[in-house]
Image (tube, rainbow, N blue to C red; front, side, top):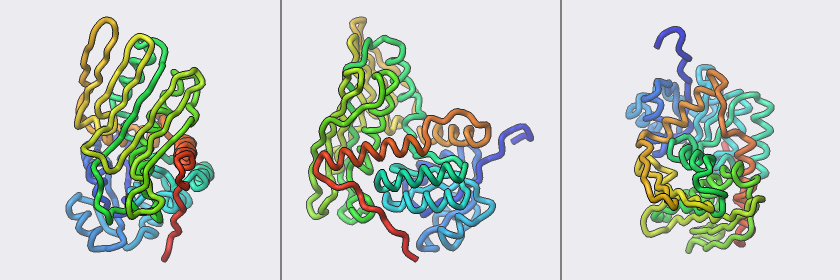
Length: 340
């Protein structure tokens, strides 16, 4: 790296979550950013993680990681209920934060994250990585071009096979549930179409099903929304599905565009467009959406390049999640208090 190149980000990792290899380790290696330190509840796990992924060093605790002067960015992939408290702590420590979604357990906590980010003057971003990939960018460009005509309907579905019963995603106290893990993508993707739909969507209705043996935790939820311009949308999620589906369909008055896997486009990079002129399939590349995300995050920090996600956006999504829960007969997720 020559002297004119931006300095690499110096990143500290909270925990040793499995997702981190895909969401951060690989992208950091590809883009030249440093994984300075990692901390985990069990130091031996942190040591194994550091050895496997070439993290420079291990620190004793999450608090030590936040206090480390060499760490400028905190990556938070902890269980959902721990996003809010550790995001708040990291911002209070003056760090930039890249947080796995959702940013908090509920809208009240997300509002506190926004206040903390504003006070800190640092960068906060919720890791909706899909938004940075050419698949989603192309969907938006096709809609903006007018090729599909006026927006009429959006259909998103994000569904996976069931995690094991002991998985924290089934834990109410850790802010688990299908909407928190999956439906946040469905709702966010609908929200991102506001520029072509007359403004932000409003929730019309929602229904869902509770996970057997996990009181208060949603196994699936379907939400219906409406835009000010009259277009409608469905945002569906299922965490005990027969297979995997992460699709987005955009229907206009003159045609439609369909992405079979907008969330993980490195598995399927197709966008299929159907109009009166025929059908075509575009392939947008299987480079990881997480790599695009880290590049955009770093460009904003180092060069003040535009960034489409911030703490305001995270709060708007969390408010919609809470509304969907209430409409479907669930309570918003409780906050998780830090102990020790």
